[in-house]
Image (cartoon, rainbow, N blue to C red; front, side, top):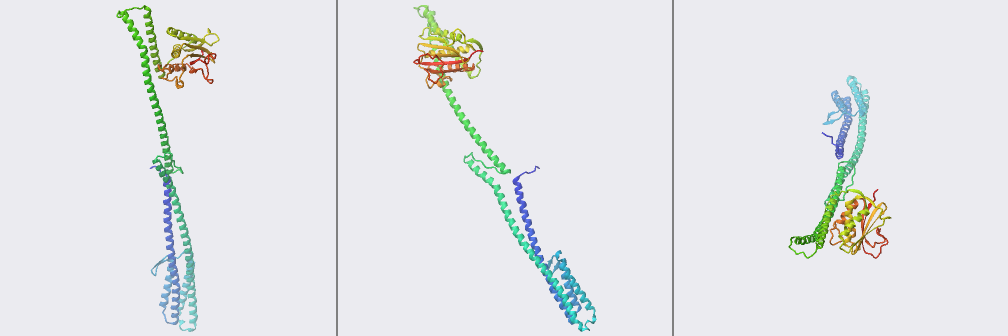
Amino acid sequence: MDKINSRILLKITLLVIVEIILIVSSFSVLAFFSQQSSLGNTINIAGKNRFLATNLLLQTEKYLDGFSSTSQVAAAINGLQFNIVTLKQGGIISGIDLKPLQSNLLEMWKTIYQNWNVYKLSFTRVALTHQLRARLIDQPLAQMRFESLAYNLVNASDRLVTQLGIQTDRNSQNLMQLQILFAILIVGILVLILYLVTRMLKPIFDLTQATSKLKKGNFDVTVRQKGTDELSILTESFNSMTASIRRYMRDQSELTQKLEETNQKLNNNDKLKNDFISIAAHELRAPLQPILGMAEVLRRRRTGEEKINTSGKEDIEYLDIIIRNAKRLLRLEQNILDMTKIESKSLKLDKERFDMIEKITNVINDFSNDLSKEKIELVFTSKHKSQSEPILVSADKVRIFEVISNLLSNAIKFTANSDKKNAEKRDGEAVVNIKDTGPGIKSEVLPKLFSKFVTNSPGGTGVGLFISKNIIEAHGGKIWAENYPKDSNSNSNSNSNESGNEKGAIFSFSLPLAK
């Protein structure tokens, strides 16, 4: 069986031991009191010696006067002897169970016994002298002698009685002092018991109050821990439990808040998704209608269903419209695929070293062919020392072409008559600026312009700028946008010589130069 290690049990055991000591002490006091009663009986028997000695003297005097016999005197002597012997040894006498005489009183008892023995021997000698009656002149002398012997016997008994009385008084005083001491001890032990019980009940009372507060919803309650006993361990467990509840509620509150925020984000994303689906459907429908319309016209002309009154130049224009809108569909499809790759973190870069100026020139040439029928002019200027000197970067050609195309396409939507581009080297970076002459970016759209499904155009999908931002950042570069003219506090990347009266927006991105 395992050893029980309990401080509370130890305290209870201590209280039980104290109670046992109290009980034993009570019995001891009663036993001592009973002993005092026996000492009183001894005083009574010792005092009886005086009466027996006086009776012996009376019988002796009668014997001397001839009024008593030797047997009567012998009976008185034997009675006194029995009383003296019983006084020492103890026993039943006169219906009293007498205790043996204490050792410190034996010397006085011996004096009584010796005086009795002298008296007995003196009477024996007198009794054996038959001429005593004949010589009457000796009778007063013998009487005086026996009176002296009886007086000695009575005095010895009185001294024993006196000593017994003194000892009884002393024992009574000691008993009184012991009772007072015992009463003080009882009161002290009761106070100690009350203190220990109060200390044991205090943590229970505190725990009860704390539990009541906890039941009412106050989870900030704690109980002060004192000691190392089981109640202290229980208090520590209670405090740990309340702390766990507080942490759980805090975590639940944070989780609820996160869930609400996530739910709000999901709702926003769901709204953005629905908006994107609506915009994407519109964007898909816009190029599909001319493609289908022009294709049907060409088909009817080739099958003879429609009489051809125009030259083949008009057919070429129809084919150009079909090709242009097909490219528009291709860009939309490519943007959706790129967005999916970005969200799944599967966008890969095939980097190579190339000239940024050459890449921008190629994009402009492609767009110039598409804009040949529109009143839009694309202007490219290099802020580099020599326009013939390349600006070399290490990047994915296809992805950078896609970024420039997205930014250029976005600028063309808002350009009335011209669109300007420039490129330059600056602080170890290649910086490209694309400026349009449109109305600029709305103030509420500008902070979140590069987020998914956010667009400044009522006909845009809000995907191109999001894709461009992720491609540029994947190369270790930066992309930004601002309205023109810019505030004095904004960092300008455009030509400072341009007129402050111009309107529009500037889209810029930077790439690290190739080492």
